[in-house]
Each structure stands twice: as C-alpha cells, then as structure tokens.
Image (tube, rainbow, N blue to C red; front, top):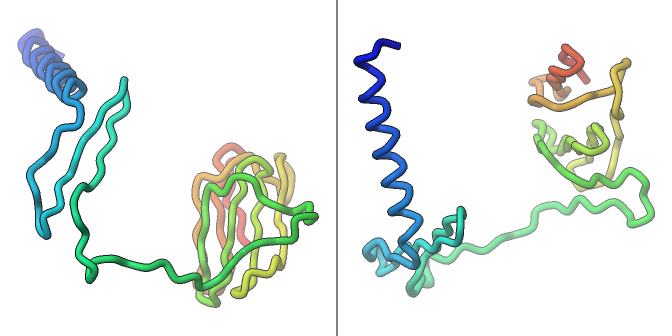
Length: 155
C-alpha cells in the first residue's frame, strides 16, 4: 500500500467508527412509518441491535404457519439429533439432516420416520470431521463436503 492510500483508508475507518458509535447511542429510534402504518423500531443494548416492527398489522397481511410434516423420533430413540446445522430435502420429499455434535446425517421419510443414520465423528470411511456443505443430487442421493477429511462423500 502506498503512503498516499493510507490516510484515506484511516479516514474511512474513522468515519465508520463514528457512524457505528452514533448508531449504538440511538436507543428505541423509529424509522418512519412504512406501508400500512408500520414502523421499524431499533433498540440497542451494549453491542446488540434489535429491529422490530411496531404498529397494527392488517388482517389480510397476517400469515399462518401450517404444519406439513413432523420429524420427531421417539424420546427413547438413541439417534436423536442435538444441533441441526444443515437441512436439505430431496425430490421425494425426504429430509436429510446434519447433526453437528455427532457428525451424523439423518435421513427421514417424507412423513417424518427415521430411515437411516449415516456416519459418526472420525476420519475413516463413513465418518465425518465436519460439514462444509451438503447438496441433494438429482438421483435422490446426497453429497457432503468434509474439508477436514479432505473429501466429498456421496450417498
């Protein structure tokens, strides 16, 4: 970096800090009312900024959640997952779920029944040391990239 570029970058950095400080000092500020009379309200506490909508939501704009499927293995099932870090659904409607703590993939039927548990922690065949991305393949299988094991596994 040349010496002529450095001062301009410092000025931009300083300006960014000033803007951040001003944003953090504002508490419960309202950005004007938008469509339908709703306003966005920003609240800040320490290093966290919350944004929420304030106002009356028109009845026609309310959405309802409709359950399509429930994945709930029995409570005594030892294959329960604890932290879902990725969730993909194939063309047959089967969810593939990656559980980070166990480094396992769970395959469920379209109606939520556990079909198969794949893998565990490790570096051998069928074992994972992480999930850097999963993709459902056109043939209904799954590919998972495990960079810590330097491989892509296909199921």
